[in-house]
Length: 414
Ligand code: ATP
Ligand code: MG
Image 1 (tube, rainbow, N blue to C red):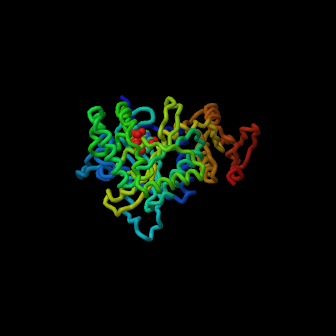
Image 2: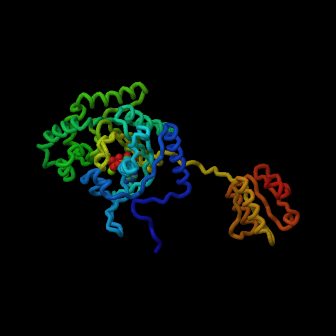
Image 3: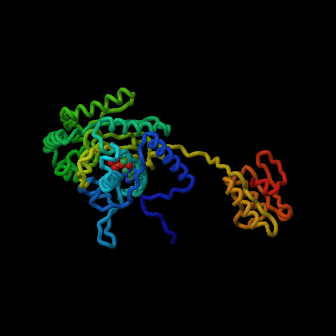
């Protein structure tokens, strides 16, 4: 029996891989232009890096982690997201040191792993491209990061973007809101979903994020977070919105949006779009926010931070497939005794000159080689035959004009 790939994973075949390369190149370009540098952290970390940062009871940690004990009895988890690892690396590598210019602007890309029920747009191994800006509490950073994500999607040609933004405020505001929310939810306690009942004790704000229908009905009339922001938190949020207004960014303030993780504060946002491939449903393609308390949760000094992650698979589903118009420079055909090795030497000489060269590897008859050359879509065919070889020459055919000529090998590779 032939093997199958694990549930929730994908093989990215060459035609698709080209799209991935374009997406990654576009991201690298936007980041470079904005003076943001790449960081690469391990694909697995100590389990606690995620359980501390996301919270033991978050969906990601309680249900979706790919965790295991390694041969040294260490509790390890494949990373479900990128932020915790980047912040861990920031602390461990002392990027907080005064000689490192602040804020530290980092981006990453790579696979993330979550044990989820696979469905359209939801996989067990998926990829994110993310940004993290550490060391500044300024709302300028919030606005600039979100603006960068919008610029990126515009560059990819996306229309129908919806930018939803909200603020959770600082700790004081968040605590005041939490109390108000708990008071509101108390009479509905028994009607909440099992998940949300648990969330009541640990992080009631997450109930607003619930996908359960009954939960959604209950929370429809819940108190609104922006009413609980203190003055500093209001000022922070208003600055972000003022920048967006000046830059003509279209956004909606969505108070029902809270991010799933405990560490968020102040500005949080999501960018959504509708995807035909997923039945025209609204899909979140980018999400993030401010996380001023995260570094402390991971044992570092208090460090303000802002970040986002975009789901690459969902973004790629929005980019049309290209037609395959790949062309190569030369296809080398060889016929007759003693032509195989000289033809390979010619192939390598041309490659050394920077040309894209293909040949036959299957010992095909001339007719078969012709077919292969056709498929390869070469600008020129080169025939290496015993007769011409004796004269250190080959036959060259311009596949566009169909002109043929005999040329010296030395001439050809010059
Ligand atoms: P959701 O509410 O859809 O489960 P989330 O809150 O778990 O999303 P984040 O942790 O914020 O998602 O991840 C950021 C982005 O990564 C998402 O907006 C989405 O585009 C993508 N993403 C998250 N989980 C998956 C997955 N299992 N498969 C594919 N992409 C994913
Ligand atoms: Mg999720």
